[in-house]
Image (tube, rainbow, N blue to C red; front, side):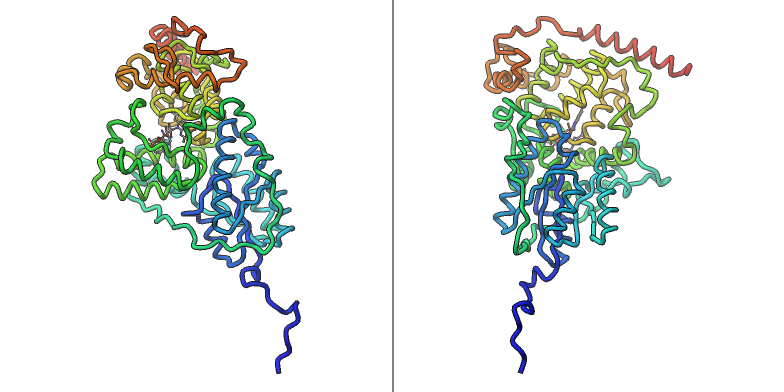
Amino acid sequence: MRARPTPSDIPDDPASATPPTLLWLRRDLRLADHAALQAAIDRGGPVIPVFLFDPETEALGAAPKWRLGLSLADLAARLEAAGSRLILRRGPALESLRALIAETGARAVHWHRLYDPGSVARDSAVKAALKAEGIAAQSHAGHVLFEPWRVQTGQGGFFRVYTPFWNAVRGRDPGAPAPMPASLPSPGVWPASDRLAAWALGAEMNRGADVVSAHICVGESAARSRLDSFLATAIDGYKTRRDRPDLPATSRLSEHLTTGEISPRQVWEAGLRAMERGARGAEHFLKELVWRDFAWHLIHHTPHILLRNWRDEWDRFPWQDDPALAWKKGMTGVPMVDAGMRELYVTGSMHNRLRMLVASYLTKHMMVHWSVGMAWFAECLIDWDPASNAMGWQWAAGSGPDAAPFFRIFNPSLQAEKFDPEGTYRRRYLAGFQGSQEATALSFFKAVPEGWALTADTPYPTAPLVGLAEGRARALAAYQTHMKTKQTA
Ligand code: FAD
């Protein structure tokens, strides 16, 4: 006769027989198409989803940090609904992971790879330390369609120019997106978690949060709905209308892609299906999505793009290091530029055409260093992405790879005539423009810092801060001198 098992012989539930796995979430705040989550589940034990408020997260600008908090709240609710939890810890990543490993008995940590130098340094150190301690630390692809080292020129190097990059990937298959797992195995006992509210991720938004809230869209389901609605209504006209800020012509998926509420592969797959159905703008849409991959490709291969001129010769260009307050306040007196800067403050985003235009005005007409604009975008954009932001600024300034030549100086008046022909966009964001008192335009004054002392009654400049012809001539003269010194250097 078999002896009755004593309590200590009784196996725990099968899930807890295998030690837990930590799922370290970063820019991948979703449950579907999540390679790291799937790999954690495949290990067989409970999965503990974790987000760490580490120094890298601490360093985020006001708007992206606030937007991150909303995304975390959404993910936490989705996890709870699936019988799981989101564990929050504050402190350096390695320290926090070690503490969680000690508390839970976890033997593995999984995450998705990022490619900016700060993340690479942190993740490499974490991986090496955990592996040395016998923990299975494993990273996965998932933040881009094609990882930076998987796209190579014929000579085995990296791409500096977009079009050949696009040609190299356009026929490739990034793989089919995976569905959300059927179930999320949970531990019997959860480790303690910080309260999200205690992190006060929105503290630096001050008055802006209420205004920007009306324009954002948060979470995995919302991202999917936005993609579906774009496919149903706007993809056909995307190629011809995408440069029009007055029309709802683009996908507005960037805030979801940067938080990882949707994966690039899910977007690619949907775009590809649309192309197969004959949607006219679909290929162009895929092409734009690949610009995002190109930015991560560049930041991986040339991380200095974040910190200094991508082309060294631009170090000698006489850019000013000026805080550019009038530009930030939407008070340059150039309506199209000011409308763009106010859109940024009111919505936490800015149409791509305006990003190029305000960047051109700052770096060329005002001759202010692109890093001033890049830092301001990093502070204000809810879709802030280190790679696309750095690439966009260096492209606009002329100092980057595959950049717009410096002598191509956007004329804001002509741009307005072409892309905002009826003034709809300017009226939406610039109070007083053609008498506009639109609610979005007026809400700018509720969002701005009180220290700016700007109200709807503040007179709008009667002349541009830097005249269009005068600024253009000054920039071109500086460029010509720069080219001469470059040749003689
Ligand atoms: P759609 O036109 O619908 O495009 C679909 C997706 O493709 C976008 O969501 C985005 O992920 C990608 N994409 C499109 N255009 C670009 C581009 N030029 N570069 C890189 N990816 C692109 N994008 C960010 O996501 N974060 C940033 O911080 C950022 N900073 C920028 C700064 C400057 C100076 C410039 C010129 C561009 C910047 N961009 C940035 C790129 C671009 O402006 C935004 O991706 C785009 O406006 C997002 O709107 P959408 O989602 O409706 O784009």
